[in-house]
Image 1 (cartoon, each protein chain N blue to C red):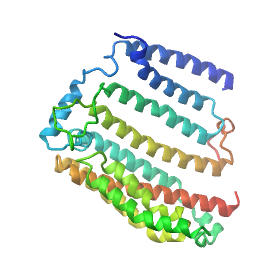
Image 2 (image 1 turned 135 degrees about the vertical axis):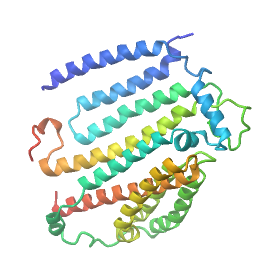
Image 3 (image 1 turned 60 degrees about the horizontal axis):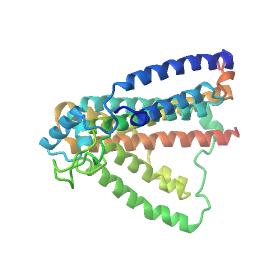
Length: 119
Length: 227
């Protein structure tokens, strides 16, 4: 049973990633490029959670559930998605800080006009 | 590189990725299936360690060394952003009265909402950090809530109060100490999930406050320069 529908979440993850990369390639503004990178990265969230999904399962938290009575989704990929979110947020902050510096030194945010590293 | 060449390069790369991706996923277990050997083992281990929130157990107990790496990435990029955004000397003097802004004129109701929500949000953040090993939440999530809570004062229109509320050097020290404490705890106190959650919560909260403080400074500098 490996129809198209069974792989749709994986395909969606790949599509989100490609859309983000397309945005970076065609970007005319560095802030836009940073946001596109975030979009591209959110494809990995979809991918990770899709891999860990289990039908009719609940969250992997046993504070109000008796262990063994229900199946839970894969917690490993959820932990990875958490790491992913944290790293993504900090990298976005760092890139935006770089963007602020570029705007101040070069007076433009268009990547095509940033020909050299000289101020 | 002209935009056309760039598009061609992108198209070739995207096509290659699609092919690799599609062939890679054909052999994966079906979506929503029951085959999760690694997940089952971590659940068993988490229950053995009496940590009902399995995600916390993985992050702070079973794979804590990975989280040390994540933590250091967080620390390094917060540090990098702060260094990049530091105000250079002559800019400070150019802008003159950087903090000469008074409280903005906002509705009293908005101010009241900010004052009322601040303690509630702080308590919520503390709760999310403290309950990370039991219920959904943890240091990362709670730290973000704590870091944002302080900025409710800014949203309520009182920037001077915000600067008094968050002395930047204190948060710098807090971030560094929490990062060091996390690494030490991760190496020495294996399985101390609540303590690690607290260290991460403090570090994330401090990092967020520092980052936003630096971006605020930049906004004020740029505004004062008239750019």
